[in-house]
Length: 235
Image (spheres, one colour):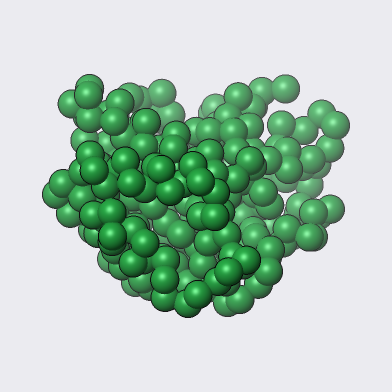
């Protein structure tokens, strides 16, 4: 089943997200994984990304990749709030005939750029997309959201090194840090990126104003990482 790309609900505000998320049940083990991303997702779609339901096929649109694809309830809620999909689909999510799965599917859900859930795939894909946009002479941004534990994947290490070496200033990584990495060491995420030539900033992942300032910033010839620290939850 494929959803129509026409917006079917009015855009809603941040305070409606809790209601939209409450329509989706059955994956409580990933509830912390979802809520940890909620504020970052909202700020991206409300204040940062140049993409809308009407511009999904525009080559010059910004791209958002949710690499942390498990527990996508917050993602679906934000997409519904912004008119990408009908909120009436939310209560039936993850059911047999629903396009909204436990992992988002780019072929079924409008606004979803990559099918994700297997951790470690999103950042390498984002590097490739950033390179492709550069080759086409497009100034569009690629923003990818990863989890702190996801950085344990070797594919991410290689992608971080390559993006820094190539100076991909159209690439931004948001690391939602909820202290879930196996060998968590507070304050060590940003230096890992800085060592490879990235511009880094660490913010409170619930502070919308701070997130907006950090996410709007672009540094010529350097990719950017925003470490969004949220409350500690092991999911």
